[in-house]
Image 1 (cartoon, rainbow, N blue to C red):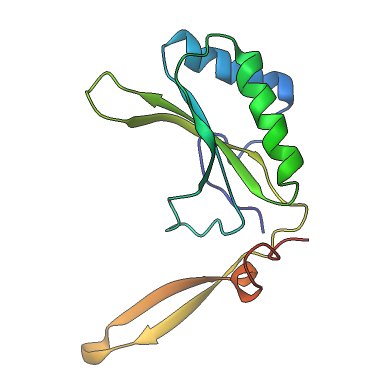
Image 2 (image 1 turned 30 degrees about the horizontal axis):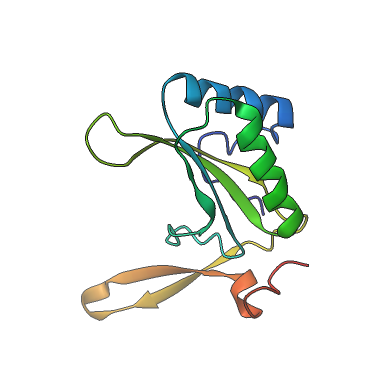
Length: 139
């Protein structure tokens, strides 16, 4: 199952050149970029591990791509996403966010149904990857 989170999630994987163009687009608008990674892409897991600090002072996309490649080397089997922030509203607002790496195998999710009182039915998702310990979820 292919995890679909972020701006370009329904498109084929972006090449490094295309990622560089998106970073240039963000930097041209004054949006600082950051890189995050996780081995649990559950839809409610919005707080991924941050790779370094947000890159506030970078003007060249090559700096962001350098950090991205370092993150890829350190976490070859993790989900990695790139975020760009727009601070025009006086707060941190995500203007652009997309996956730049995913594991070779994506086990997916299952939907658990729970029946309650008055014929209410609730659903929760369970990531198959979460059955393994953290750090070993994707091989």
